[in-house]
Amino acid sequence: MDLWFPLGGGSFTYKVDAASAVPVSTSGTYNPANRVTGISLGSQGSHTVIITCVSAGVFGGFTVYGGDETFGVLGFDSAHVGFTTANITGDSLFPNTLAAIAPDLVVLQVTANEYLSNSATPAQQAASLATLIGWLEALPKIPSILLWGSWDISVHHSPAGGQATYATYKAACAALATGDPHITYVDLATTMADS
Image (cartoon, rainbow, N blue to C red):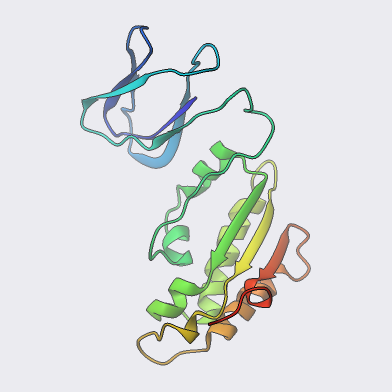
């Protein structure tokens, strides 16, 4: 089992079944990139894990394994409602989290929030996405990257202000996959109806 937490967020203890509580300090310079403490649950089966806050902080969550830490499919969801690509690339510590996870595949659903918020032009969004892709391609083990273009959300949602069409946003992102062996672009509009 892995426990995830940001550095500088206080301290907590964890206790597995009847074992003694184990302290974990997250003291140090604040860093929102998640840190990991791996703990053993002993045998497979049902266990009770108690996390207790000792001093004010943030606990990021946990990942439970069943003897499959090195094989199978393990997913991490880094979604944030309303975030644009620029919000993600504005966090210079995010690459540390990517390095800690060492993903084999990264799925990026892009364009919707930029389009709906009118916060970036298609070219600006593609530039932010290129930064994020650069972080991924700088990892010691380069993951496969799937750019996922959703169905045409403009059918149901109209953003404030006038800007490029949703198709223009998707095209700008799809262009990043051209010639890059690590990226595949999939347009869900080819398999899902817009209405």
